[in-house]
Image (tube, rainbow, N blue to C red):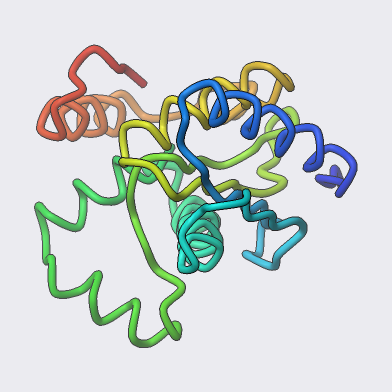
Length: 174
């Protein structure tokens, strides 16, 4: 069983801070294991006081939903999925989990091979900026947000790509 180690998370956090500093936006970064338990959390100086909890909630949400179904490759898809189906459900789930459900840009699962080993969340900038920062850091440290072997059913891919389009990011494809 593969694991995501704290030392790996520190490298990801360094890369996030590097990009956030370059963009001039202080953020918080959270990394959780596949069950949503916190591995690492850091708040940059001047990041909003609520951003650590928000980053952790984003990471937790991705871990929870990716564990439920491979249909959820990131927070933007989860957010759009809720908007399409039942926006009230997202609020209810946030209440039922003591605020741990938050779907937005800047979060995705982390895979080693075909195993989901965790998820990350970045919070403090706009959703788009959080996403840019997170993708930069993920690519810099070599984390994968999709399983090595793509077994996603074509109908599911089509659905996710439609959700990206509705979210205004039709250039992104699963």
